[in-house]
Image 1 (cartoon, rainbow, N blue to C red):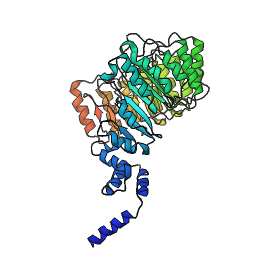
Image 2 (image 1 turned 90 degrees about the vertical axis):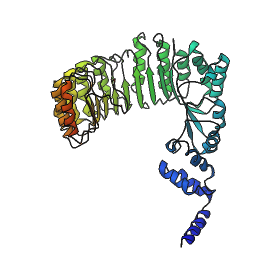
Image 3 (image 1 turned 180 degrees about the vertical axis):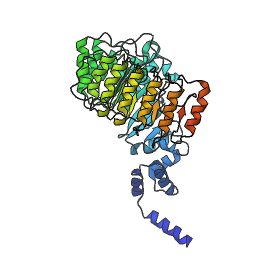
Length: 469
């Protein structure tokens, strides 16, 4: 009987054309199921180029191989397999790969590359000629996305070589640079304005002097926003304090009404003109991060008009002197938004701002609330505790580095642990809790099974960010 079953299986497999077996595999999106399917045919000749993925899974994480291909090691042993399977992937994601010869071996007529670099090898730093040659080879790759973080660039040779190479990257849609971009980024923005880019992220890393946006820089960004279906824009470390009001008004008018914009992030010393802007439509993005932009109460009140009835699901206003009146304005419109993650770390909220947010919580979608470093006392903590019984969505509450004492902490622990939903994290570290009372609070939390983590003294590993621990 067993022998007959084996013969039937052999005949059944042999009767299926290999191209059908391979095509079925390509429709399997689950990683584990995909490799189980390949394993069933590993002793046959039916897999074609897919057997290279099975071979790679012996040394690579299979979740890096399917359904998307992420290559972290491109060497003599792996380049042949990557080259063989390149035709079945529309995009291959290369990480920390500087060998241009091996990258070019993986090029196919239909496959595009994303390249994520965090440094460069010494070979490209040996001379000006080798640096420019490396970028010339880079420009000939079918790049869809280039992401690069580099903490040193003496003489700005890499920036200059990159600027020279960018016009040849005519398929590039995403550019993410964390480089010493000083003293001006005008040359890069000139290229951006006339490019096919839809995603731009520019971060200035530890510059000797703060890079400054010129009027031309802002005009070029405005031009790019007008001409392209921009999806994401992140700027960090650049000053725009000297830009004329009229130029900033044009920029704000285009920026906040750009329908294609999905994510916007600024971490700049100031954002001039925001308080003067009149929002006529809800802001279009789902992710909005304005960190350390010196936003005051008037800026917040203006922004709240745009946030009302918007699609924003993540709002990060960390390190802004918004104040109680600004936080109250935000609290008033929160129920009209789909915001799920709200970060108000170091915003001068105080107990008054904390109360305004607390009163709004039951009518919101907020599941993560960050209120660290806001001088919140027991009064604000009790206000939050009182609304938790009617707030079933929130699962993460961060209140580190405030002035909450044991009584306020106990009220929060008791109420969050008494709900019918799980609390993933209640962060009360570095408050005004007497060390002798921490053990009592920890015991209270331990007896409430719906509190997964209550942090009172130990540093915890963050899931997404440190919230300025």
